[in-house]
Amino acid sequence: MALSPAVLQSKFHNQNLLPFLNKVPSTNLGCDGFPFSFKAKSSTYKAPQACLESKSPQEVRPLANFPPSLWGNRFSSININHSEFETYDTQVKLLTPKIRNMLVTSTSDVMDKIILIDTLCRLGVSYHFEDVIEEELNQIFNKQPHFLDENEYDLYTVSLAFRAFRQHGFKMSCDVFNKFKDSDGKFKSSLLSDVKGMLSLYEATHLSLPGEDILDQALAFTKQYLESSAVESFPNLGSHIINALEQPFHNGVPRLEARKFIDFYEAGESPNQTLLEFAKLDYNRVQLLHQQELNHFSKRWKELNIASEIPYARDRMAEIFFWAVATYYEPHYAHVRMIIAKVVLLISLVDDTIDAYATIDETHRLAAAIERWDMSCVDELPDYMKIIYKLLLDTFNEFENDLKERKESYSVKFGREAFQELVRGYYLEALWRDEGKVPSFDEYIYNGSMTTGLPLVTTVSYMGVEKIKGTEEFEWLQTNPKLNHVSGAFIRLVNDLTFHKTEQERGHVASCIDCYVKQYGVSKEEAVKVLQKMATDCWKEINEEIMRPTQVSVDLLMRVVNLVRFTDVSYKYGDGYTDSQQLKQFVKGLFVDPIFI
Image (cartoon, rainbow, N blue to C red; front, top):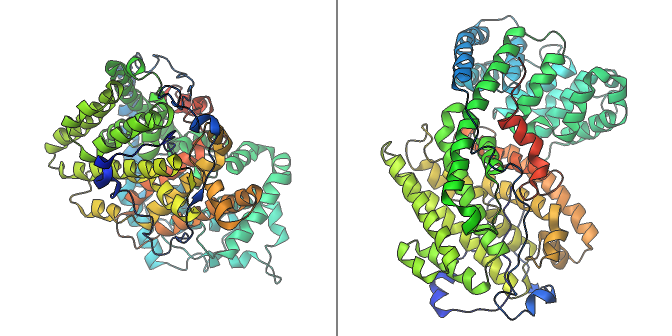
């Protein structure tokens, strides 16, 4: 999910900021294989005159009037049922060895094991058995690479295996689907009678990579069928089909998808009752842990008194914590979730300040203070900004003290530098907006992929992760890897396409649509079509970047993918962060309503 860039309303130049200006992100930096280049020059953008002609600092404040929180004090005052948690925890611990035994027990058909692994993943409980799953998939993929070709598996089975391997970073060939095509090169019409196979193939197509035409054909073939008649013809799978069309599994937030799949699995043909019970118990157990964490986080907001001190800012504690849970839902990442939540809160406050309250003079002062990162700068800020600046520095000091005990405080430096880089990006957008210029599309999307906040959130999400023992992963992130580029570009494209009109009415910085129109001389309608296709293609690039071999572990790469998934879900029908009514049912499912057992 992207937090919108600055809105700047007047001219201001400060010679003391020149050293800082020289450190804004360079838009002539490229990334090997990234589909955007940097050629076109900036051109003038005519901003809404009501903004530019204002004289008074009070008149130029771009007030957004964000809607209030839907939740009030619900999460800060929630009572955690500790005895209920103990009951769930005990039952989960009793069942875990039984499930593990099911995984390691030898079977005559490797597909039985792959189906079990996929079921555990979709039920949201595979984290209990990460080591076994990794070993089993690695062994099958490397020792039996042609098992799908050597057996007469149906479409459902081949598609499931293909998706399962690719979701774990194993680059299974898409040629496994050739046997389902006729002599004309089209998918066989007889497949239309196999609704489970068609649904499975549809889900598998979302793991496609660039240039895999057969999966593009498969997507068109299955989507047309599922949208046209499958729901009416097969009502028992109706809800499953509707959900897949709305939110394909691979593109969805894992924790949300687990919640939904538990219901689908229970309503399916002959579910394994042990797996089903285990999934329900574990979901409710983890939900209680998340409730407790959200309770602590919400109390932090109240204690800071931000709602009174900074009334223009969005109060989105539950939605911010949803962001953290979307990235890491597993219980043992509680510390990382809290780091992510605290940093996203800071991003939101800075973003709302620049976007919805600060004058151009105040924006310059805040940007320069964050660049210097020194508490002595606080005296140069207006009172309301002092609160934000102190919170920013205090929060990172808190991270350093907490991680020092674990000998991981070295990672905080990378988080701080990523925050400064984000603000430099905001500042560059501020310069474009203040000067009334439309940058080239290539310049805009390069900088815009960073100002989504994804590189920063990814960096802090690696802080405190036990499997990271040094600086290698952080140094990799500082190279601006292609995965971050493309993921950020997707978020920026979806952000701009979703609420371009609303932000232009508020005098926002030119969007990717404006930049594309100006650079390529096409209509807005044409630009929207091209950018929508570009967003779709970004997913293929993202998938390619998680295929083995990888520079860092696939599990860590998937945390970046999870941030993209969060955007895919939260911007499905608008800006779900600002208009949190759109995320209400998701928040309830994650943090309020347990699964009936």
